[in-house]
Structures are given as C-alpha cells and as structure tokens.
Image 1 (tube, helix red, strand yellow):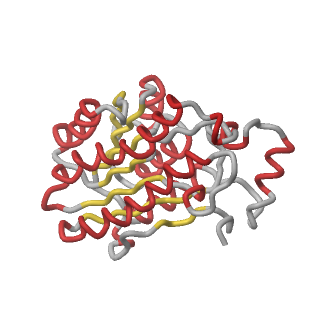
Image 2 (cartoon, one colour; image 1 turned 60 degrees about the vertical axis):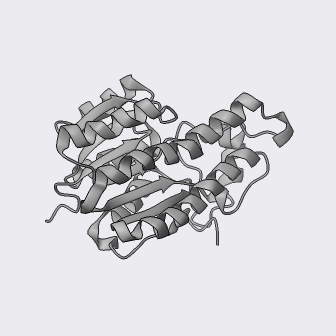
Amino acid sequence: MTLRLKDKVAVVTGAASGFGEGIAKRFAEEGATVIVADLNGDGARRVAGEIGGSATPIMADVTDAADVKAMIGAATEGFGGLDILINNAGFTHRNKPLTEVGEDEFDRILAVNAKAIYLATLEAVPAMGERGGVIINTASTAGLRPRPGLTWYNASKGFAITATKAMAVELAPKQIRVNCLCPVAGETGMLADFMGEDTPEMREKFVSTIPLGRLSQPLDIANAALWLASDEANFITGVALEVDGGRCV
C-alpha cells in the first residue's frame, strides 16, 4: 500500500495532546517526518517517543516569533524543507458570559488562535519555496455556528476561517494549498472549558446537538487532516471542512 505522505516533512503545533497528537501520529503512519511542536516540552517528547524515529519534538510557544522561527527551522535545517504546516495549537476561555472574560484571557486567545497562524505562515511560506505545500489551520464549528458563553473564542475561530480563505487565494500561485478544519467539541483537554464543567449532564447536552450522536475523537480530525494534506486533495483549497457529525447542518 502506498503511504500517502511518503517523504513529506510536516510541522504540527499543539501536538502534545488532543487533535494535534492524533494528527502527528496519523501523519507518521502515512510516511511523514513530523516535527512534534508544543509549549509542553515533556508532552512533545512523549508523543515523539511513541511515534519513533520519524518524529522530532520541539518545545515552542506559537505566539513567540523566535520560537516559531526555530520550529520551522527544525524542518528546513533538519530535513531539507517543509511540505505541510498544521496550525493546530489552540486556547479558550472557560464557558461564561462575554463580560466576564478578562483582558489577559482575551489577549491569550487571540495570540494562540490568530497571531500564531500569522507568525507560522511568515516562516512557512518561504520554507516551502518552489516545492509548494499545504497549510491546514484548526478552526472550529464555533466559527460557523457560535454558542453563547464562548464569544471571544468563537470570534478567534472566525478569524481562522476567514484567514484560511484569504491565504488560499493569495498563496495559490505558489502552489500552496490552505484549508481549515472545523471540529465539533471533542475528547480533548479543552472539553471542560467548552462546556463550563465536565459532567454527564453537560456532555449529554452537547451530544444532543450532534446528529451522529457523539463527540469528536482525535482520529476523526487526524483522518480529515490527512486527506487534506495528501495528493488526493490536490485541487482542494480555501475550504472550511466541517468534521462535526452533522452539527452545522
């Protein structure tokens, strides 16, 4: 069986857990060399260790320009270039009224969910060079069908969706495809923040809005990212792909 990402070099942010961990592991299974990047250095090393020789961990704050430069450099200097960038790192405030979100929380949300895409793109585009490449941003159903209580997080994911579409148009002449994923709430460390509290009752309430009857899993998101990153999707760009069990229908 042909490996769909054979000889590709990928950087995955927020890869120490959740969706990012799932993407990093799935990409490696399909032949990619993966830079496992996360602010949690121990977590990045754990994931890279579980993947094996095709993964390299790097501790990086995606809101810091120097860290992002080093992160992309781990691909270009270590493996000769960059083919795939997954801007997956994310942050949210806990579900609560919009007037109760502090300025520090707001700034962190915009830094991780918006500025990080900007910083990584500045480094990734020249790194991809004439070979072209793929950029995938992790957005959210929250950017398409916002819920009360997550207003500023919703807005940051709206940025990710609009930025994706604009990037896709501008970078198309360079043969760089740009898409984003819009997952519904999933089994990740951020779930309790999305719900306000992680109780059976809150889970039931959230699941009741998903026609397929369950929360998302990291493998759901990883498989969608794999398809978008592969040559099977080489005519797909500017898409906000809903991976949501029908939530946005």
